[in-house]
Image (cartoon, rainbow, N blue to C red; front, side, top):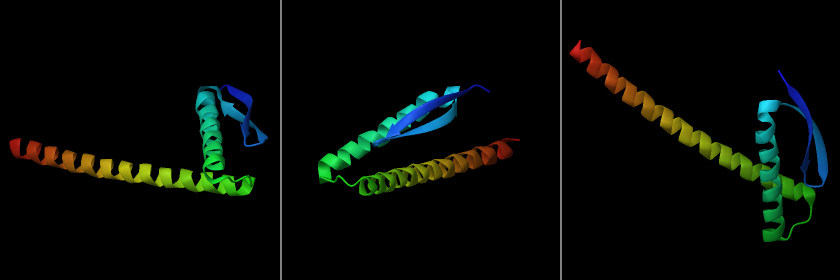
Length: 94
């Protein structure tokens, strides 16, 4: 397993991390998305307090994760129902 030592800058701080080589791009993209949200909130709401900005970004990310999870659950339920229907059709044929 190849690991890389990288630094991700979030806000005004750098955070050293050890990540799998195949995860580096994903980790760097996550850092960029966080910084983009920080910038957006700073500009939209005129906030300079880092703790407030980070709290708003954390809240926003959690809402997005919850929404994605709901969609995933709905997809899983639909797939399960479809598989059940197909299974019943196969049973009736056999």
